[in-house]
Length: 173
Image 1 (spheres, one colour):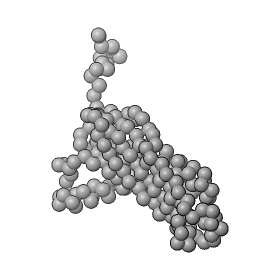
Image 2: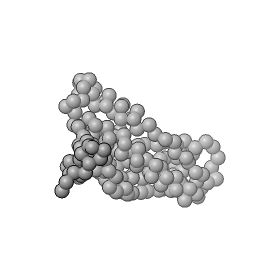
Image 3: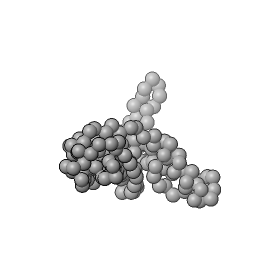
Image 4: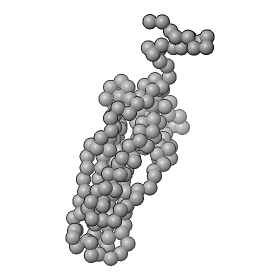
């Protein structure tokens, strides 16, 4: 196989690819749940709903350069002390990440992957809520950069040092 010449320069072959790589291999719903334990009586309740959102993320290495990242969202709505609904989704994806140092890999798993998963999870939660007979709940964007930064500070505190040079890749936002 010969290298192609472009404007006098030799283009690298496909086999000699350098630098970091990032691919989205598969996106899927891993778990899904909706409960309206006090329906239909809750539909007659008056008052301001209280919404609580919990967010969690899990990272699992599948192969040398393949990772499953799961983003879990639990949204609980209570009205006058009664649970109106509970919507849960675990949106997951398989991502290919190669050619990265540990810090870059950790940041990609903690920021970029959840940024890709979140719109899918938010859409599903919205569909569950409206299908359950409740008013739509537009979920606000989440700053995964800030969440990741906070997780770095927490991990640094747990390690008792400022540097994460020896930290295990966690990818948790």
